Length: 170
Image (cartoon, rainbow, N blue to C red; front, side):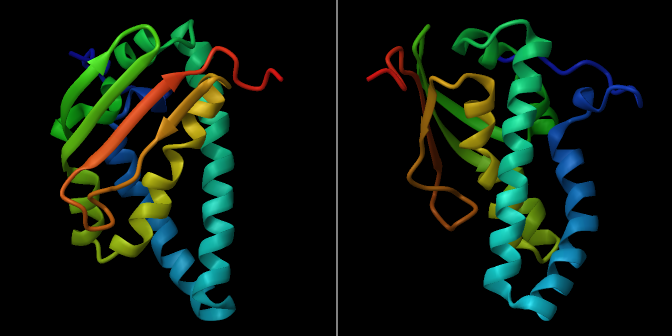
């Protein structure tokens, strides 16, 4: 069971439940991206937003590893309490060991929140779009495979993390 997040302090945003952070971000970024869509076209605005959020996620993954004091799967799992705080995700763990972490998200309050805000189309960019780059920043050998999301209308999200020992070699 992932650890519960520390109580939030204003000088440590990482202790804030991520669901709360994403709501605040969406309330600012959503109207801004809508204005950019109107001005520059939806495809171009979304492309730029996705690129920036992916870059931020990779940087956050590296910072997360440094703060957690490790970049292996057990440390990753044990340190992700802020993502599940406030029952943000209901998860069925399928496999977890030193090299793999496979789980399905069966309920996603992030998707529910973006729908409630009228931003379901942006929710994938704001949240799901981070999912591949965050672990890449955390550990360059960590690979995520995910083929479906609740955000995009599927009944569950399938997260499959693996540490590839020979990634990038040869």
